[in-house]
Length: 397
Image: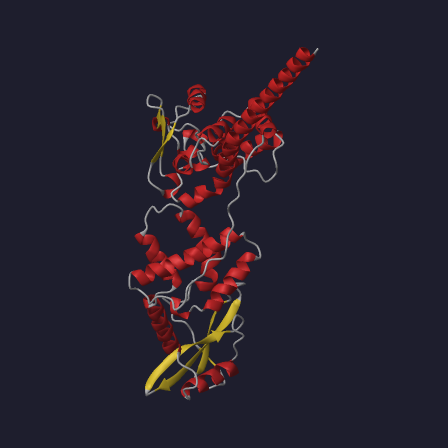
């Protein structure tokens, strides 16, 4: 290998070699300096002519500062950066805790969503921080920033994920617990949709007139059973027990497997529903694989039926199913909780007012019957009174 020629300058300890500019490929001077530090010779790069705007004079000035100890040598800078990286690797930052959290939670449901929340909202401001450096004001600023563009539920989910990561670290003695509580913003998610008789009739007509091979049947099944969208996406033919009359719900919203009744209407629907591409799924996606979306098709049916814009095409039907059962007065809230596979009875409480109305209506029925009986007795007495009066008048004559 040919020896690289060194070119002297008018400044002691400063020389350059000829290289090529990184951006243009044109010839460019690369300046070096030589000096002694604690008796040891040091030779290092000072900078490039164009890229670093380096000149012999600037290189000489840099050399003087290093001789006087006002600037560290390049070797010292590299060693300091290496030590800083090594120290950072030992620090339990939010980024590092998140990686450890994921290692210990393989296959956790919702991890893809959590990953997006972390990368988009937590990592930019908190990733390189250790929990001990996080202040309540930092949390409040994150909440305010998110609330400008995100729904309250999204804000709460992001804060809950940050809290979960920190609690994981504290529980496993990787860090000390926070000195304050990350408070969740109030979220009112209790939106309960319902359909009046006219809207229900319009929906069923729109389903009958639609030609999508699966959307209409999915909407009917949601209305007949109250199944969630994700549960219908995961539903396989082997999960349906036509003999005993049950549908096996696998992993309902992260909870244990559940069984719900296969109603007569649902059984008739599923028996007539075609098996597509020999797929194991009842409502398969492309290539017979598990479906992940059907929003466009069900929203078209919803719009054709003229339903309100904020009515959720599938989840709204789950609410409609629950509302019909609750308002019938024939289903108690515990049974409704089991049918809806709610883990927490508080979720079912949103339908309590419908059941209360049905019970009140049923209670009023007793009063109505008594009132009707009283009126009949009153009319009977009036007829008897009129009859006696007529008999007296007849005798007098």
